[in-house]
Length: 225
Image 1 (cartoon, rainbow, N blue to C red):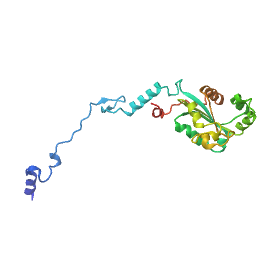
Image 2 (cartoon, rainbow, N blue to C red):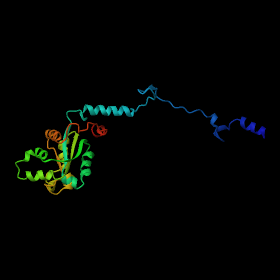
Image 3 (cartoon, one colour):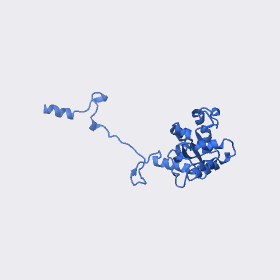
């Protein structure tokens, strides 16, 4: 038996590719070739791959964002004051309304639940003080808590007005906040600044110094080239 085992190990391989495949020891070893290695900034040895590393892609996206003026430090970015009125709060529409602006891609810079005093409401609506409905408007806006918001983004003022819809909810397009969630002008659930200048004025009126949060959304490179 020992002699047969030795003969089996020393026997020549079968001719012409017939019979059993050669053993693993007889096969040529596989090899992989890589691009030249380099030292990464972190001190590790990295392979020279053709695709950009995730960190470099994020850095490039951040650089493009800065160059296009879409970060908080840019003077071209607008801010708009959006307020959910007492009827919107009482009806439990706060989350629904906030989500409209979040899904659009604007950045929330300030948010608070606030009981509006009479003098502040009168200052906010001072352009309407000569209107016959002014006293009723002040009673309405001070009748319960409101949600004050400061939103930031490219063209946020005009875009927010479109999201909100016409002043009269019955004339507001379906898909807008007022078109979907309100039926009467006196209960139209939300306010939005009508110009960039008014956006700045109203935010300064409703938010104290230090109440706005300066931060940058990681979604920015995915929203704007």
